[in-house]
Image (cartoon, rainbow, N blue to C red):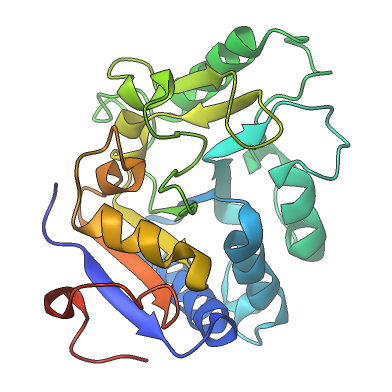
Length: 261
């Protein structure tokens, strides 16, 4: 792991979403000031969607040059493109339809009714090729060095669609995999792998609610990424766990941050 994970614990999930939104806006603006562009990998789920909704409501959102932002996804449900369960559809509802993005820079994972058809492995390979085309010569893994990669942490410690003991969490070579037999519906998905996740400069893991407390404690006192995939998600520069008090409730005292927001 690169460095020690940093924990920030907020009073409740609403404050966590607003604070994470402000943090992400600042990170995007800083990256655009430094390099002209920024890249973010989005996550779905209740915490990922709450963050996007908070950005949409933030008075600071217009500080971002949305036309110079590349958006990717960490995973996706392999269902038809218009299915309301898709992460991309939910992200569009919460934020993307409300800001002036460049459509060419919104990199949506393939749907089951897309050009790759119902072959999830072919769809995963297609997304891997898109990532590789965007990578620079210094990006040896075949994905861009994302500025921020967002991940929700599941109650079973899964991140993206990498579930404990599933084949995808064992992948060491490919950057994107098709997932079959996922333990939560729908069973067929597309996911970045841990090597692709670890290419990001910063990885932010989001967890709120009492139902995430066991997963957070397990991942941060890790038995290993095969049993707790969240423990294998970290960035090249920084790994940030954004929690509310309920999700942090079972952390050992030594891990609890000295100051909470």
